[in-house]
Length: 137
Image (cartoon, rainbow, N blue to C red; front, side, top):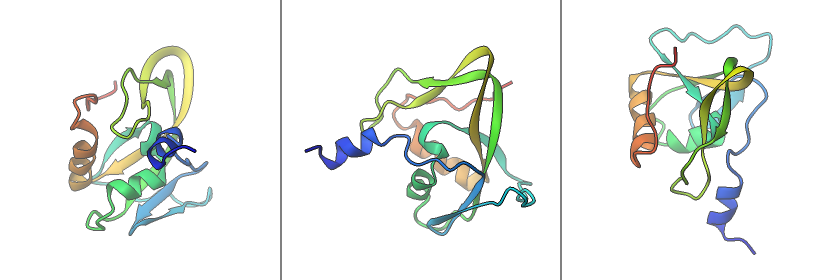
């Protein structure tokens, strides 16, 4: 029988919804296709790969409730693919990363983060030195 930590690693990237959603107050709510997009003024778009697309993971990262709502919008990215990274995460999964791939297109999510949320995301992602935050042109 697998341990809880093995089950967690094998469940990566966790459940990923098929539509945009908002995380707030330890829960998430999917947005109907007919809904107007949420106001993202004053926020930075951050591509979500792997578990950062999952409401479960975002709720874990922002669990103390002081960060407010996070709009998570489904999008398509051209000329890139999502592939396995060349490292193992602290909890045992093999994370995802982007790879330039002309002609490819992937569906992913964009986390629209305010400054406090972005700082928290950096804390959860860059502590091991395996991640780098940058601009995708």
